[in-house]
Amino acid sequence: MNKVFIEKVSIIIPVYNSSKTISLLVDKIQDDIKIYNELEIVLVNDGSRLDNSSEVCENIAATNPTVKFINLSRNFGEHNAVLAGLNYCTGDCAVIMDDDFQNPPKDVYKLVDEIINGNDVVFSKYEEKKHHFLRNLGSKFNNLFASILLNKPRDLYLSSFKAINRFVIDELVKYKGPYPYIDGLILRITQKFVSVSVEHVSRANDKSGYSLRKLISLWLNMFTNFSIMPLRLAVALGFIFSIVGLVLALVFFIEKINNPELPMGWTSLMVSIFLLGSLQLFAIGMVGEYLGRMFLSTGGKPQFVVRSLINCSKAKESEK
Image 1: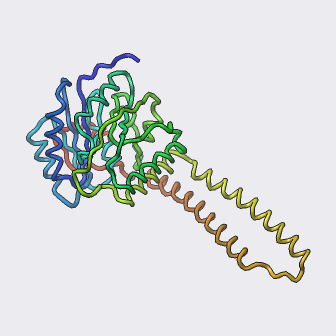
Image 2 (image 1 turned 180 degrees about the horizontal axis):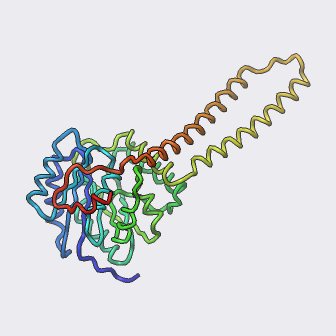
Image 3 (image 1 turned 135 degrees about the horizontal axis):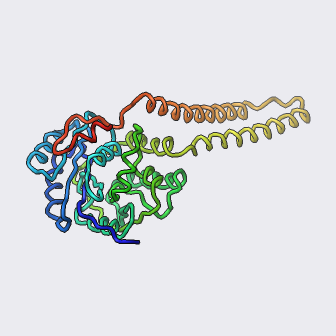
């Protein structure tokens, strides 16, 4: 691969209820990352409600011209907030980082070095993750299904801490749908990606911004926006149960002929009803999910809405 010159690096940080840590994180980034000609930090407040993250980010940006602040009108979700940041970043590459100090700023060098080496995207991978057991289990579930639904290489870990070059940034911001899944979009755009090992430290905040509801919503974005595999699964299950039902009907018919006095089984009847009913509800539910998302997309559901900007050009906003 040919070397790529990186003059300006953008650090994009979606902020959610992180007023206690975001100032320290910005200071740490500016202290640790020195070698690039230009560095910009893009803070995106994703509708924080439990603290004054918006005011803290405003103060940071107001006193530091290298910090951009995008204040969203409500909570749209991490991936929507990241896309908002990508719409306003101006770096030759962008590094997406969490707001809770689990990604040490010094590891930005490792990611950007691989962008310089000619890769489009650089994912981080961890020897040991400091998440809660259930969150780690959810990550494994997400990566497993991403391999099945999105043709993701099984040895690739889809981490939120990653670097992407300007080519991929420009392609990502073309997506205007209300349910973005950044990694799914990346896998649509390029196959030039690598992983590098980085440190994963304990969370500065006690509680993760990702609730079970948000994780399920993210999985649904992957399932329904980037693959029709669930619909094909419903069709396959319908075919399988149809064959099973036909075989059982034949068995019961023969059994009734051989033993006319034999009463039909209550258990087999109930099991059949519950299985077929569940399968029908699953299939109808999946079709409904797809149709509902299509309806919301065509109805103009926004990807994000910007309430206010600091140190950002409004040209991009008019294009949304």
